[in-house]
Amino acid sequence: MSADTPARTTTGFGHKRQAFRNWRGQRPFWGGMLTLLAGIPIMYVPYQNLTLGSLTIRMSTTAGAGSLIIGVLLVVLGLTMWFQPHSRVFAGIAAILLALVSLVVSNFGAFLIGFLLGLIGGALGVSWAPAKPARAERGAQDTTGTASAPVTAAGEEAPPAQDPAAPQQGPRDDTAVSEASPAAGADAHDGNGRHRAG
Image (cartoon, rainbow, N blue to C red; front, side, top):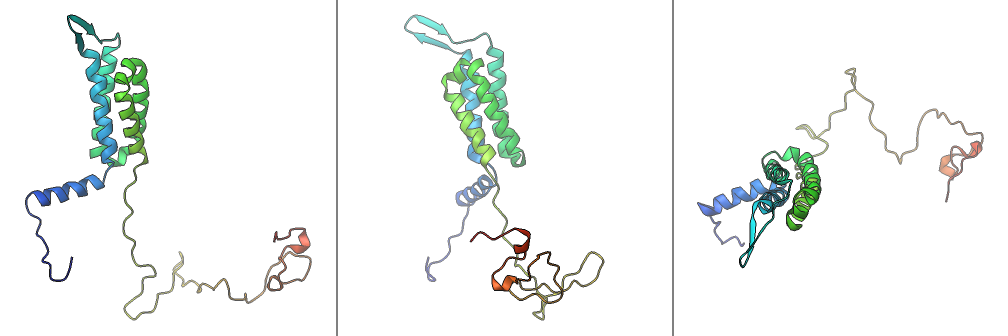
């Protein structure tokens, strides 16, 4: 976009599309969608009849009610991922477990379609993480440009932090037997049997 190109105003459909895109980015949308879609074949297939010519095959199992419950729960967990994104880990793990149970209860997870959708949707729900907020400027400074000194819990001003590369001043409490200094390349614990590797 150049400086001469006028900015497009988003009205009507474009505004709704942008609002949906923002909503979708704040939650595990695809995990919820796949989990919701996994519930449909799991609760639908066991109650349907397959007709081949004049032969009618009933797909119902003895656990037809179990298939219905698993399918409805998967739909609810998909909606939970959409509308309660902070519950995404629970909903994802529950979706994975229900997809695994559907293998036994509901015609091999409604012929593996519902099983695979539930497994992938639950994994996407568990693995999704919200975007990190933009970081604030580090080292807040006042209007004069000088940083304020840190304050301890007792309300006293803390001493300024020292540069780790600067030589230490004051007494050192070394337990080393030898008097070799770290600046000369010797470890402070050389005399205690501890040596640097390298």
